[in-house]
Length: 210
Image (cartoon, rainbow, N blue to C red):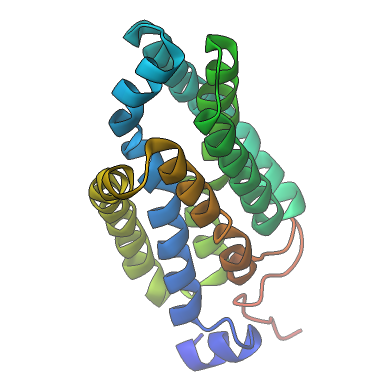
């Protein structure tokens, strides 16, 4: 199938729009997580606890991120990528806000560990890859996967200095709130990655003559 035919079947969601939105989701989801180290000292000082508390929260985050990914993928196949990406982004945003106002180790573990961990599993690039594979014609897929991976890496590069700039200009709590607001951008972006549940014909799938 030509790119023109594939694009006409998905309306405004042309291959370029789908790839662009997927790249932005990857950039946004990987970014804050890579910059959390910037908050170790100010958060530990504010909470009057040792670095072991922060380290345990991030360890819990990584563990739950890995555990949650297969379930997130299964839910995306069942209910569509948009719903799972949106729920993941909301969990991620809630975790960042709650982390900004954590006053006990338990709250930090809940926010930076549980909420952000499951949020990452719901809106990370693995789900984006699955949506891109279903929505895009074969001629676009290699470019899309490469661009999305690069966008995720660029997010890690971008958010660390952004976190430092926000902390210096305002404070560490405001920086986390700004990051939380940025995560909400994934909600409209995920609309471009909407796909049908398993068993439905995808827009880019060619029709068969009988």
